[in-house]
Image (cartoon, rainbow, N blue to C red; front, side, top):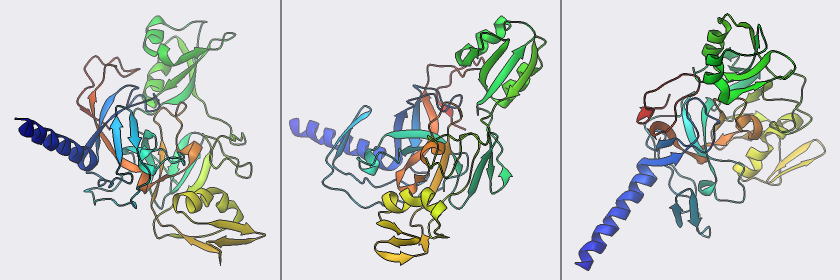
Length: 337
């Protein structure tokens, strides 16, 4: 009897581990950076078959709820089983946070964002609008921007405040209100009789933010005016310059494990003088749909391919409605777009 129970337990645990490692994994959305596509606390399904399952880099690991216990004295090289799809633009992806350098890659904090830039793309953001290879990127319907809503009087209609109060602030001295809105909802509000104007806000181009990648005063970008930026592609070669070394230094040193030194105008990689560098991996650029409340690639740079966990494919359970849309139907068991 005990042997039979033990056998059932071993089989059950083995099956659970197989599914979790190679097929699917669940994940709880930790923040509101993906509003309104995903809400904080949503319980989602991560599809590992899509991009191919990553073989555990730290095999001696046990996940307990949102925490993990692991031994890092055995670490395997990165390898991924081929998937049935490459990462596509606008996919919602789950990945390990690239800057957790003290932890093994597969034990780093999990993030969920929308993939905007693919390997080999050149990305730029101008006045909060994203351009890929000089073409404006069509936005998904749930992307939120910063708007100033001005009224004809000193207060908003109650139906508006009831619908949007979670993301509203008011300038005490004027009839201006700040909202995080989708383009569709901004257009809807603009047609109301009590509204005099709806203006999309963006940070001026000449306003430098030190928190924004690559975190250097020599490249003065901000979250609304960013780039242009080439996203590394495996096998592609770049000519190294003083400026692009600021951008790709971490990729060369930390992600691809090279020793980089600069002496005067000369670049040495692994103690060999070079003028060029060939990337060993593919990289991705991500944004949160809640553009002004998201710590994403605009702040920390690229997502290396070995950090990819899988595609966020389905909301298994959600106890919340989507803000701004008055949706009463359940969001549980709905596909993620």
